[in-house]
Every structure is written in C-alpha cells, then in structure tokens.
Image (cartoon, rainbow, N blue to C red; front, side, top):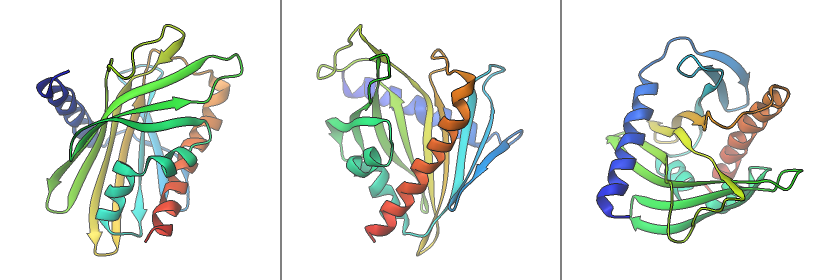
Amino acid sequence: MGQSQYSSIVDKAIDDAQLVKNSQENWNVLLKGKYFTLSAKPYNKTEKQILKLEGNIPAQVNQVVEYFFNNYESIKNNREQCEVFESLEVIDSDTKVTVFKLKPMQDGHRIESLNIIHKKKINQNQVLIVNAHLDDHPKMPKNSNITRIENIINGIFLKESNSTNTFMEGYFLNDPKVPIPPQLIPQLTQSFLQSYEKDVESILQKK
C-alpha cells in the first residue's frame, strides 16, 4: 500500500475522532476509577456503544504520548486477553502499522486487529493518537480461520494541563458487526477501564 493510501485512512480516522469529540451530548457515566471516568452513548441508533474515557494523568504530555505510541509490551501486559501487540512496519516517525491479537477463545476461535497508529499534533498543547483500521498487509495476510475486527473509532486526545499533568480524552468503538453477548458487557467494560488504569501506573513507573 502506498503512502497516499495510508494517509487517506489516517485522515478519515482523525476526522471521525474529532467529530465524536465535538459531540458532547447524551454521554452516560458507566464507571469511575482512580484516574478515569468511563462513559458511553449509542452509536448511530444501534445497540453498539461508543465509549469515552477521560481523566488526568500525573505525567508530562510527551511521556504519555511516548507510552501510547511506542510502549507495546506494557500495553499488551496491561490487557489480560491480549496475546500479541507489536509493530509490523514503520511508515514514518509519526506512523506505524501494528497488529493486536487476542488470546484464543474457549472454543479456539481467534480474533485480531490490524491498524495504522498515527500521532498528530493538534495544537501547541495537544496531540491526537489514532488507531485506524487497515484491511490487509503483506506481513499479515488475511486468514479465514481468524476474525479480523475493525476499529471504527479509536482516538486518544492528550492535552497538556501543566508541566506535570496531562488530560486524556479517548473515544473507542470496535466493529459493530461483531456481536457481544449482553451478559459479558459488564465484565468487558470493567476490564477496559482497568487496562487504562494500569497504563497510568506503567507511565508513572517510567517517570
């Protein structure tokens, strides 16, 4: 895939994240943790929910950006069901192709996500990191036995509050075509929040 095709995918992911960020109505708080509040609202009148994660991280913004853009090992370890999270290709200093694989399900079924991660400076004090869905890659051809899910929206806005604090505002929506059993939603929601709480602890350990 050429640079222009990567760019168009990234540009759409940036536009989608900013569009959701600008729509601040009808968010319902689901959970509160030590660092973050997790909220949700329906996605385009479907049963699927867009998640919003917001809170303060007591670290410099460049440290937080570095963590979410480059620290694959810690991010993997902080997600209980993640088996692999790694870079497949470095496109430029702000853009990479990554793969995220979940551990096998109880029935042996496997799920993965192929993305372009890109960081963009929005203004002097704010950086946006998006994970944009990539359909295919030479190093990661499609496998009919593995479900490849799509990040519809995955954007983290990181804003410098002051020299020692960063305000994080993240928006997340996975593939609406993949059904989630209702009885698993509370457990998955709790796990989602806990993974980002652990990320903050990992960032603080590296200060």
